[in-house]
View (cartoon, rainbow over the protein chains, first blue to last red):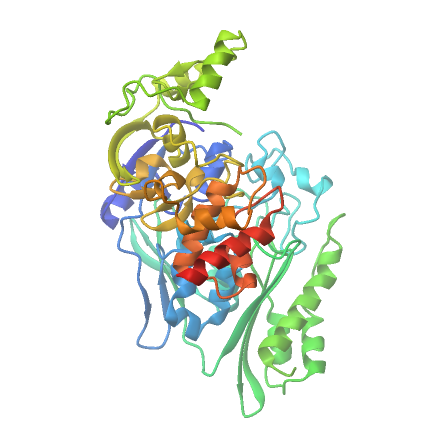
Length: 326
Length: 216
């Protein structure tokens, strides 16, 4: 681990000042400390933001759900409002990492976490995300767990978060605070596809701080849930996953929010699947027909061809589970 | 895997009875190795610390911080290299070697301790961030000679073979019981999945947690 200075801040103004000067924010630290030890990350200055007042979970007047950036994964998952309004968020969180890591890691840090691509973590391997221009060892390497959607010639790494898949499905908004003030970014624009600059992963300016993730109000009743498919039953990253939320009224699906994880370079929203569901009556045939669109545009690599079919089946099963025809 | 060992330039923490501790298995092995002429780097410093020469040189120029925390009920003030993990602070500065270093990457759970009552991976916790924190390790669980119920349950259920993961399993189990995730063997398995046991004692570990939760 490279040496670094350490500063604890207790108000956002001090945090932003330090961030503008190039300090790196640390909250739970579960990704950052791990990657610093591997020398993948080499910050010269850590700004400890864990004392900032960003720990609230609340419901807005219009019925949106706000989760403070420093709420831990464990706290968010267990929060009554989260469990009642959006089970898909609680389920995604509780199927992530381990109980210990969920006690440490925060919601803001979760969506900032970096890929688990083994070549990214191995400082002796070529990786455009770690060292721009060095190449991508995963393309010709062992790429069974890599992405089939949103990839580029430069990078095929997946985004590892589960709860980010739920946030993508529910069209969350990320509240940011920076030296130039506050702004909001739609979740779909917050995490960046690799393109030719895989080292740039979030739409964040220097020193900008995530303050809140907000889930906009959705019509009720809303049923939702998260399905994660992986090599072992617990404490493992997704091969495929599906976040689904459905609003059914008068026997017809009026709202459908669907996204997939484990398959994309970013959490992968599935608008074609959603469009197929809207206005239709829930049925076994509908789930299958909608899920058939889940892998549209997929570009599998040598070792992950199975993911396209697995993704369709994952989405179909979760539509059935949430939609309740069986 | 790299290790941030304590800075030799930093005086060892002062505390009651720490000036010349009696020989332990750890210091005995370290000393014997040195006498045997198999010294690779460093030696015994302050009775508990093994410092590699390379790390010591790097550490001398590295930023450090002063932190006061409570470990197993004892208040401690210590100056640490900012890179020091809680795990290394416990093991190398305080001589509390019950918490184990398995993967040093948050993947195995062998280093699990409680910080302010919550189970965490001490290998991913920077010690310098723990100002005012209350830390409980496996050494702090028993009440004198009376074992914690979960320690006793691990013996009753024969829930270990090599024992390396056991301190982490027990600390994680204490957290799991406290959190109330012990409704069924399946729930215990899920909520204990952050602790890996290469001997494969999972069935008995689940029984030990069940036994203790049932008594509560």
